[in-house]
Image (tube, rainbow, N blue to C red; front, side, top):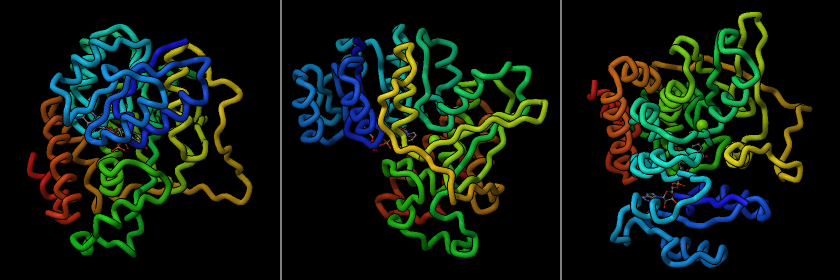
Length: 338
Ligand code: NAD
Ligand code: MG
């Protein structure tokens, strides 16, 4: 039986993680939760899993910081599903301990990946679906065999060039941007998906998780979100990972990898049926969505620039969600850091 400390328990990834913990009470036990604002939701989870007050952390009200909370609630497995830059202090604390970190908060690796790799004492197992698939694929080939790694992107809600030409970007509403075609996610990552900044961050995340040069990565727009990553070997073979778009699979894989087990047969998930389905692939439109160019530039300039990129984006997304700036202005504000 492994104990789990879940940070960001009330969010989209947090809720899906709780679903997995509920499915496998004989394998894992929740021993602590943290969240940002939602006291009622946290208390409800606390009641369900019989947690004491000291095992629940609400960042808005707690006097102590999240680092202290983590130190007082040691677990066999840590899950960091806090969104945005707010998730970074928790990662920095957890990596000083030896038990594995199942990491959804990609911002930690985007802003501090070099530092984390240099100082971490634990294994980091990605929850992000693309990186979960990449890790699985890369375990099947030798490093020297790898020619290309595909990072797939849905293209977000504004992929259609005819319907959403760049001239209309200043009129796109928060409601339109939050309406993701294939994934159900928290607000911040949904906006990041609409700007393709999420893919830009995922490129940096992949650079920090796996040891390959940037030229190895190829972003492929795949609107159906069935293929999560692919690895092409020098012999011309391509191995792909496919499944219905649901975060339950990468979360389960991450948790069971941390337990040094494979996902049990009884794991319940919607299976993908190939009949009558079309899977398509396109190039990314860098003109309408310059995010990937920003990421490449930041990678070239170093970790400090990656932090600035992260920060400029976090701020812009918040302003956009408060309807204080337009969709087009998100790019303009970020571009200024260069
Ligand atoms: P969300 O907005 O739904 O949930 C965020 C959680 O973090 C909430 O529980 C919130 O209360 C908590 N939180 C916010 N600030 C906090 C603070 N200062 N201290 C403690 N808790 C705090 O976000 P999400 O969609 O679940 O995403 C979480 C992370 O996972 C993000 O980094 C995102 O990029 C990554 N991710 C999400 C998905 C997805 O499908 N949702 C996929 C891949 C990666
Ligand atoms: Mg992803």
